[in-house]
Image 1 (tube, one colour):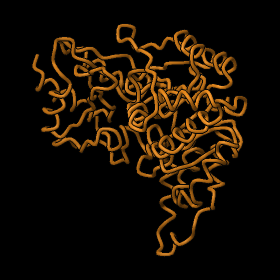
Image 2 (tube, rainbow, N blue to C red; image 1 turned 120 degrees about the vertical axis):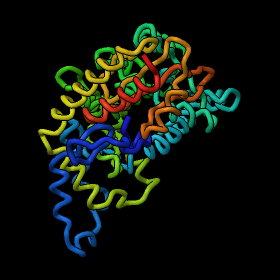
Image 3 (cartoon, rainbow, N blue to C red; image 1 turned 90 degrees about the vertical axis):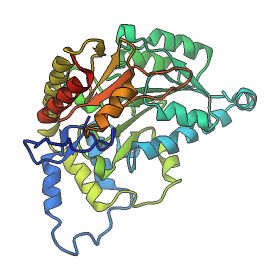
Image 4 (spheres, helix red, strand yellow; image 1 turned 90 degrees about the horizontal axis):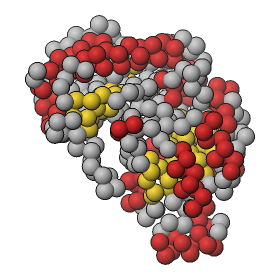
Length: 375
């Protein structure tokens, strides 16, 4: 909903927020990050460079995620990582095999991307635009978009590739795979590559859902990407990272220069990781925000809201209305929501996604939706 990073929304007209806090996707910046900012008050405070390879942040990430610093590749957000790493990975996997080279020349599918059909759209879209083959596996709204891991296994038996899974998924908000489901596949298909995008995983309590990050040191064919933009509330700081085997991290580093992240970025990232109170607080706020939206959305006829474990709720009209029509009407009221363009032969006209805000913002959204949609 009121999200400067995903939905480009503005502050709702006529709403006085109860708190004057840094907002991102309805969350708050970690308190220790604000303490870092208070240190910078003199003209000379920004004159020094960060460490060339951002060692303090890489070490902090390694401690938090159960890997080694050599497994950590940093960049200005996960978008640049995806753009750099996926084409490089696919190219290397194709060149490793004359048979894959031939398949790529003839059919452009020497080492395809294998991903769910309704997921973070930029990866399959950019891959297809770049001449890479994408195999889309279905997600069924009738089953709350659950992912068929057995179907993925059968697919890998026929053809290896890069398995890209956003977990929890964007935009459906549900957990698609667990460690118990994926470890047998990672072990059975060592020549395949598995990329688990955990951009939203911090909204999940690790006691209820085991993260994938610490498996990277054990499995060289596994990669995990993360961001500070969402649960950490630091989209403006632009910090993303990839966990992968050291040789792959080194290969990516050779394509870029040092001093990628500035001193302030580095220190804020470390402070966020070392703030023990932040993520439990955010998980509780997200739980309350989802409950508030679900209660309000249940009052609208002809509208279905899907279960989510992230900081957004996916909805669809079941009576023929279109998400784009709702988006247009809400934009006139200072609210922006996410709708979806056709992709890979599928249309999503009935769908839209709402990002959580503060309680006052959620209330404002529901009131405006009631005014727009009617009883």
